Image (cartoon, rainbow, N blue to C red):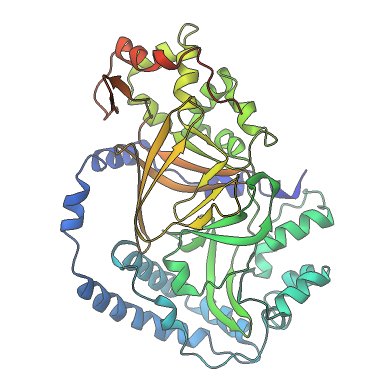
Length: 457
């Protein structure tokens, strides 16, 4: 068993949590509201800044107590977090929500975290002297180049450091992984960039030191999330201590190991309660093994409709698509959901063909056309990004309701509605906007792409 599957279901099913059907329904209803009306209700920039800084100031007093850079700063931080865990989590949670919806991109949150005593130890020295990270330090000691990295000053690093109790969650019957697999696991906890708590709060994904052939030019990423558990990494690992500063970066303590993700298709397969319809469609059309063959593409984006999204098409249309006669139409439909060689996270973009085509998505409004496997058909994607708040729309209609399902070979973006190719009238293309479609109307939209030489993976 490979090390990347140490927690095959426990990690993934908790890491990639999806709303129940009634929540999807509510999201779908809200997605029809005007974007303009939402922006009209926003407070002014000055009101936002004043309110946020007031809230952040209160939280900073708590953070100050746990980030004094003494000889045992990491121990102090985790001790304090254990004593006040729920309160700290609540404060981080509340601050995160303030950042997610209202903070303008001009606010420099990092400035709030530079008021601490000057650190006098490197990241490696901090974890190797802490009583809470003995297992992590022992694992890193097996790789001299990692010791040099975390002792070096070539960059300001970020380490998401699993505390010793995180290692106790590994099932006893898991075979010992190879040295190469353990090193990949450790690299997945390190970012070569500087992410103090303020930056984490307004970030959706974080680049790591782990590079994988399946993504092409970009490194593997982590996702950061704010939910009922507070501030988490990859949806399931809770941050229990923040902003332990070293001379060469910052440490955040986490309560669960971060497992490098499997391929996108495996994630879909692990979650039949949400994606059984999509999985069946990918299997029947032959797309599932094609997408899973990473020798044919470098990275990619799968816009994944949930079971509920398929239900919104109506039983007649779903029944037709999955019939023997409708299979070729289903293939064309699903081709329109797959983007190969271009990986679009909510705040970063990788393209396989060029080193220059890798960048962070800027704050504000960002537009990109992503070519799909459907010949000559692209998806018009608009990303609205302000602070942590991100809204992604496809073809000005379907909304991404769950962002950034991090995969080894790309990313999954869960969408509120099935994407249907546009209908061409004269020289205009009319996109489907959710109106009711008969089987004949659906066939008419898909007919031009059936038996076509669409893009092959």
